Amino acid sequence: MAARLKDETRRSGRSFKEVVNELIRLGLTTRRARKPVQRFTVKARSLGLRPGLDYDKTSELMEQLEGPFHR
Image 1 (cartoon, rainbow, N blue to C red):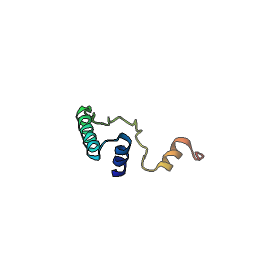
Image 2 (cartoon, helix red, strand yellow; image 1 turned 120 degrees about the horizontal axis):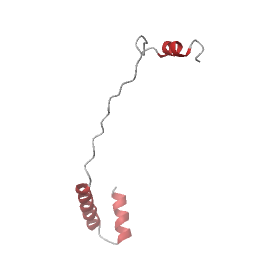
Image 3 (tube, rainbow, N blue to C red; image 1 turned 60 degrees about the vertical axis):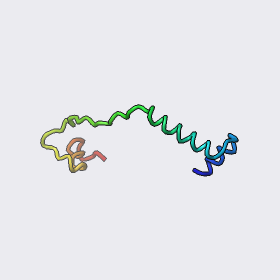
Image 4 (cartoon, one colour; image 1 turned 90 degrees about the vertical axis):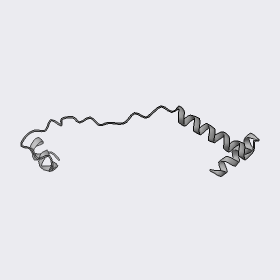
């Protein structure tokens, strides 16, 4: 990070202190201007599960639904 600051001082012709202060001010003002982030929420939905099927054993489930040659 310090190397990038030194590069900016060489590029702009300003002092290190001026560059650092400008970037701090810029960071603080953009942080205030940022919109609040909307929380991400997950909405639960019905999976439409069929009674009598065991959804924990997927290979058995595939065989029940598609027959013995599902592979």
